[in-house]
Length: 377
Ligand SMILES: Nc1ncnc2c1ncn2[C@@H]1O[C@H](COP(=O)(O)OP(=O)(O)O)[C@@H](O)[C@H]1O
Ligand SMILES: [Mg+2]
Image (cartoon, rainbow, N blue to C red; front, top):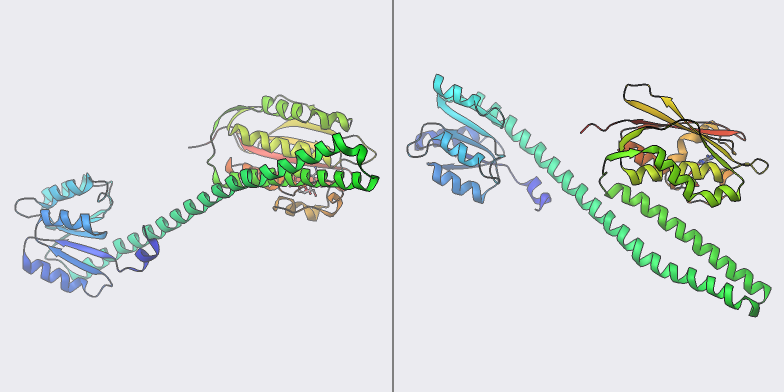
C-alpha cells in the first residue's frame, strides 16, 4: 500500500439513499468539506463501490426498498475489507431504529435524524474524518516500524553471515600459522601474527555484541516461565574459565524467583552484568561478585542486586553507561565494545522493569535489576 499517496488524498465519503433529492441535499451540505463525495441509490450499488474505493465514512439511509440500511450495514460488517468503515445511519426519528443502533455499539457508528440539520451533519462527519485521518497516520507509522524491523533483521542476517564467515577464516588461518609455522617466523613476524589474531578476536566480539543488540530491536519477546537460579548457574558455568583465571568468586546469597520472561534475554542480562563485574576488577583485588534478592517496591515485583568490588564509576558517569558504544575513561584499559549495558537496558525495558546503579569510584559497583514476576498481556 502506498501510504504516502493515501495520506495526501482527500478522504472519500459514500452517501447511500434511494431518493435523489436527499442525495442532492447531502452533497450540497458536504461540499464545504475537503473530501470526495460519492452518491448511490441502492445497497447493491453501495457494496460494489465499497469494494473499489477506500471510504472514510458511509452516510446510510435506513429506509430503502430491497436492501435496507441495516441489511447493508450487516453485509459491510461481515466483510474484512469493509468492516472497519464507520457508518452514520440516517433515519426518520423512530424508536424501533434507535434500539437497533444499540446493537452496533462495537463499531464506529452514529445516527442522524431526518430532516438532516446541516450543522449537526457536518460536525459528526468531521469527527469521523478526523478519526480516519488518525487511523491512517497510525497505519503509516505501523508499516514504517515493520519496514525498519525488517531491515534490522536483514542487517543482522548480513552481519552474521557475510561478516562473520570471512572473519572466521582469518581467525582460523592466523591460529594455524601461529601453531604450525611460528618456528619459521622472526620475533617481529610472530608479534604481528599475534596482533592479527587478537584484532580478529576483538572484531568477532564486536559483531556478536552488535548482533545481539540489533536482534533485540527486531525480534519479539517470547515469554515463558524462567527459573533465574538456572539462568545464573548457566552464566556462571559459561564464565568459569574467566572466574578461575581471575581467581574470582560469584556468590549467590539468596534463592532467586521463577518469573515470566524471555529465557535467552535473561541469560544475556546476567551474562553482561556478571562478566562486567569480573572484567572491571581492581588490579590488587581478586573479583568477588555477590548476587542477592531484595524486595520490590511494588507487589509482584522483585529486585536482584549484583554487587562487585571492582574499579567503580564516578556518579555523574553512571547515566551514560547505557548508551551504545559508551565506555568510561577508567575502563579503556579493558577490552570491550560498549554494547553490553545498552543490551541489558533494552531487555529490562522489554520486560517492563527498570535498572538502578550505585557506585563508588575505586571501590565497587551495585546493579539493581527490578523486574515484575509476571507479564501482563
Ligand atoms: N561493573 C562495572 N564496574 C565499573 N565500570 C563498569 C561496570 N560495568 C560497566 N561499567 C562501565 O560501563 C561501560 C559500558 O559497559 P558495557 O556496555 O558492558 O560495555 P563494555 O563492557 O563492552 O565496555 C564500560 O565500558 C565501563 O566503563
Ligand atoms: Mg560489558
